[in-house]
Image (cartoon, rainbow, N blue to C red; front, side, top):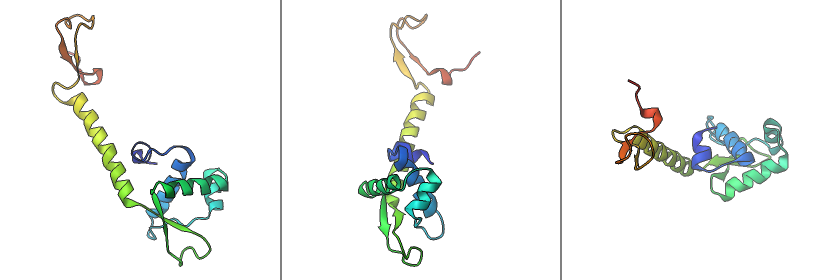
Length: 136
């Protein structure tokens, strides 16, 4: 599983597990997920009904799309990733990570503290988070 799946796409529970499984298949040469619901359920230790429900949820959220690949899946359905959704989710997570880095690590980054009760803070000063402080 990748961070973009939880933070960018907001996936949780069985939807997250099924999406990660689809994602792993789509990284192969075929680029499509064509495993049976029974096999997926067995691998993920969930019911076939949960797998089917999660696939339906992922389809309705436009995170995956049904594929037409009769060579690999003559008896069932196949799915592909919606690459736009992956790209957008990764960008969202990266923007959030960049914002966190900037606020905590940039010179002068941190929060402005007034009358916090700490010595030296009575007039207000820029205080960086503990992780960024250096001990002398």
